[in-house]
Every structure is written in structure tokens, then in C-alpha cells.
Figure (cartoon, rainbow, N blue to C red):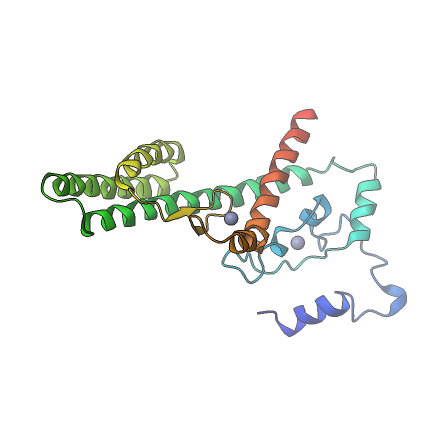
Length: 223
Ligand SMILES: [Zn+2]
Ligand SMILES: [Zn+2]
């Protein structure tokens, strides 16, 4: 929910209380009150409003004119703003990648449980499924542990093993994890729902972050 002040900011601009002749006249692009992410392209805080990825409001000034002034200035790309922007976007990506891995793990577990509990495998097969379920549960636990300790590479290795186990367990794949935003998707869902997802704030936001990270990395290497 927006506060009354934020709502007024949205509607009337942040300098609504200033007299017309002093509006933004003395705010320079390098002022503390100006959002540096916005100067670099966009402010991530604006991507996910009212989604479960909501980053909360940004209190700083987002002003297109100031961005133009920054781009025209002789100090453009010399202040380290782009580097900070890239680091921040990368941290957001790391977070969604964790969410994606957790999603895979959760799916693997529920599918294994379904397979174990559902009709079908009997006798020897049932025993096999139980072993598989235990294995998967074990893997999920280890992955979560590694993840919480920040041992990302090891966790990724485990995820691969989990994927292999999952292929055994999942006779019928009904859900999948979106590799961009981490949302759960229904396999073979109606095209209109697929489109809704692809056009949704959360998916579009992470797609934008991903492509911007790639661009900034290329830029950084070129310098
Ligand atoms: Zn901002
Ligand atoms: Zn998505």
C-alpha cells in the first residue's frame, strides 16, 4: 500500500510543496536525493510493485530530465554508478535463482510423494519408489542446507543430481518452474494464461533485470 505522501508524489511529483520557480532548480543529478539506479536506466523498486517480489518503495528522485543531464555530462559512466547498478541487479538475480532452485526441489519432492502414494507401482516397484523418495528428500535437505550456507556451486551440483532422480520419479510432469521468475507453471496450460504470465510484472521484471545484467557486463568488459 502506498502512503498518502507517496500517492501525492506519484500524482503531483515529489517537489509538489515547492513554489513553481524553485522546482528542482537546485537538485543536480549527483545529489544524494537522486536515485542512481534510475540514472543508469531504471529503478528496480518500480518493477515489482504489489507482487510477491515487491522491493518496497524507493524514496529517491526519479527524474528523466536529470537522467538526460547525467548522460550529457562529462562525468557520465565515470562515477561507478553503473557498477553499483550491476551489482544490485546481480544480487536480485541470485535471489530469484535461489527461488527457482527451491521451486525445482519442491516439485521434485511433491512428484515423488505423489508417485509413492498414488496407484500404480506395486510390489517391487513400490519399494523402488520409496527408495527414490527417500533419496530425493535427502537431496532436497542437502540442497537447502548448502543454499543457506551460500555454497551455491555445490548446491547446483546437487540440483543436477536431483534433476536426474526427478526424471526417474516424474512419470507425469504436470508442473514446471519458470526459469526466468521462479513461478510455478502448469505444463500445457492455455496459451492465454501462458501469455498472461509472460506479460506479468514479475516475469517481465526479472527478464528486464537479466537482459540489463548482460548489457552491463558487456559494457564493463569494453571499458
Ligand atoms: Zn529509485
Ligand atoms: Zn516467469
